[in-house]
Image 1 (cartoon, rainbow, N blue to C red):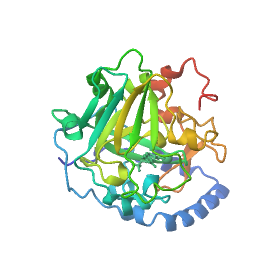
Image 2: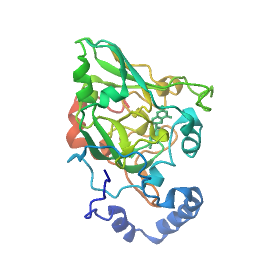
Image 3: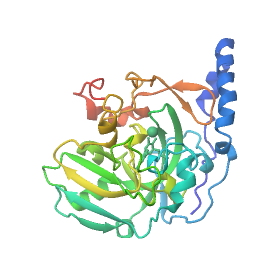
Image 4: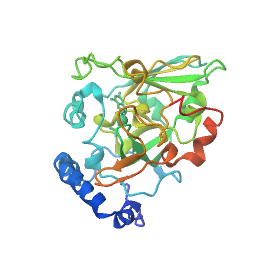
Length: 316
Ligand SMILES: Nc1nc2c(c(=O)[nH]1)N[C@H]1C(S)=C(S)[C@@H](COP(=O)(O)O)O[C@H]1N2
Ligand SMILES: [Mo]
């Protein structure tokens, strides 16, 4: 099924904002524009989706943002998937060698129905939704992506976590033969991240299996990856092979690798800077101008209640 863009997409607010920029800001931005024109050449190739493997029974979700979508070309060539290398272009160039079928997920820990599940069985009979969500990277860029997936909560209910399950942990496939970046000593492998159980059960949290109505390309985390739209992108674990229900907060790749820079909660928060750069603004690729970052990536109405009693500066 072909997902069409809604005809009434608002032209982004940023255009209006630019009108008010003073000359100095304009010159600064023009410099950045000149630089990024080099860096984003491949991104602006405006390719349509390749219509290779389309997903069936995809319905639109009212939980979507109406912002202008990034292109298929952009979403699939500017990626973080460090198992395939450190550069944004590496995943698109190298992830195709990863074999994604057959694919199983081992469900473990504090649940009544653990076991090894085939992705195809997980998808059988499920209605998929298109959820247009922003993805905000901790590196201060953002994209708007038409994910296709289903609520993680639906899957969790099916495997019946016990009352001892306080957190859920996700692990990415780890294979040195298929993943040239995965031998890097810079990271504490494998790629693990997790959520508190109430975050995992939140209706905005999805397991994605596609984008633009099609099967996920490997570089975006095929065949199945997490998407948590109010958190920095690094919480979205790609190419999941293990889901574990646990009592203790998971030890994640990023909190083990650089605990001062990446916290467990990782909620998008303009008031909590990364130690090496500000999080107050972001660049919606491929635009040139920075825009203000919004608390919880704009999803505060839905998720702020989860953190009512927490100091988000301490629990970053
Ligand atoms: N296994 C794995 N998952 C990962 C990453 C990674 O390096 N390895 N990068 C994360 C980061 S930092 C971001 S911003 C998003 C990027 O997702 P996208 O490439 O689909 O836009 O994936 C996240 N999931
Ligand atoms: Mo990221």
